[in-house]
Length: 318
Length: 224
Ligand SMILES: Nc1ncnc2c1ncn2[C@@H]1O[C@H](COP(=O)(O)OP(=O)(O)O)[C@@H](O)[C@H]1O
Ligand SMILES: [Mg+2]
Image 1 (cartoon, rainbow over the protein chains, first blue to last red):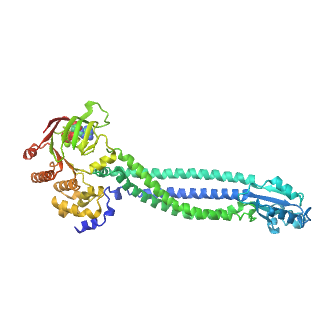
Image 2: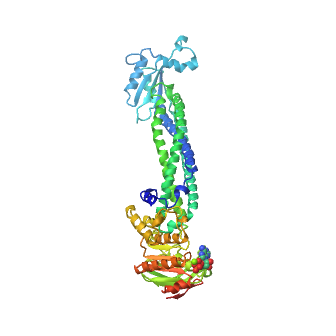
Image 3: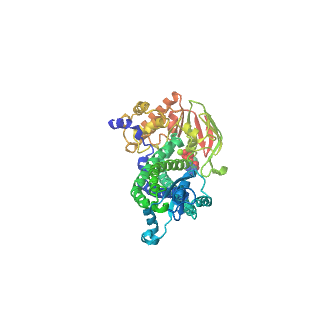
């Protein structure tokens, strides 16, 4: 009697289909966890590719290099040296967001692989190197027209676009992204399959109870909701475990990716674009958001899969 | 409120010809509040006819109206709602072994969406009525056959169904228990519930005279 009263007070735990035992596959959360781990890693790769693609498009792809030979000689027109005249022209151009002349140390770092020692010590005439960044939203800079304009104060000035090369890298990154998205789809399908198989097994195990409850007037949605609630919970737990398991690997990846991204930046850290570190850094908050979405997606997949599986199975009953 | 018109039922793929029919050309009607015996030798089709009435199967042919609902054409959702208005006592009880006696009997009320607060008093009262007040927390497999039968009856009537169907309900009972069950069904019938009881025990029928549907080899051979 006392026991009965305790039961009456806990109707929330009412388990008419016996799912706590029949739909408690210990393997299911583990399988979902493994799938979620794969999804997390795929997602990280996708986000990294997306970040680099964006970086190359907006940063490197938008950047130009200008070389002014004999920078300290007086300008052909206007005041000051040739380098100063070119800089002034560039800064006056509204299509150009930033123009910066590389310092001696940066130049030497750039040239060292080719020249070894300090170029000035070799008595070489080193041109001034100016990096530009296109203003956001401005049309692509026409290199030839710019070169003509710059040649007026400083004849012999060269304009070099990094665009085509980086556009190719960006295209590569985009195809990597597409591949990763495809892999994510497959991973989601595997999760759905695993959940469908587990659901069918427990349907078969509880066949008799299902027939009884169905015969007493339980609607398809009533029964499907019981299974779906449980599948949602199991999948969410699995998804959470998998995401947690992915965290150390992701942290390591982010660490490895940061210097790589910096290296890929134009001018090897010339600083015009803010460097690659920010590209890698931008990935981290986005990734955190996506990682929270993973267990949620697993839960949604679990709920939907169980609903469909149970409703299809119930069709065998009148 | 029950009206069958040339109803046929076949098992299996359902597409079988007339030879595959276990019920054929069944036509009869039972008014609200009526009582019928469902009689016939073993294999005559009593359980099959009850399967139609309990909505465990749809007719393979003909038209069948149960509690005003045309079950040959109704949606799954409508059938589920209709089942909640029908109480069934199976020969093999069909209790849920992992649930307590209380929860088994409470199940129809919960399926009907009755708030928890309004369940416990009714269920306790019903179980007292069938003499199981001391077994609320027991699991059905620990009970005797007669006790399980009474749990099944309590579950069948707890939702105040408009129609009660029983398939060989006295098959597992001794004489005194069978007597008590028939009195109980008679009482519910007097309160306005339609009752149909299938049996092949002629002695029981003799003690409770009432109109009967007689089946033989899948055909209705007597009504009244
Ligand atoms: N599930 C089934 N599949 C095929 N044939 C069945 C099935 N159930 C019953 N039958 C057949 O239908 C006929 C009527 O059976 P049933 O309705 O159980 O009769 P009763 O209840 O009067 O003994 C019998 O010939 C039986 O073999
Ligand atoms: Mg039978």
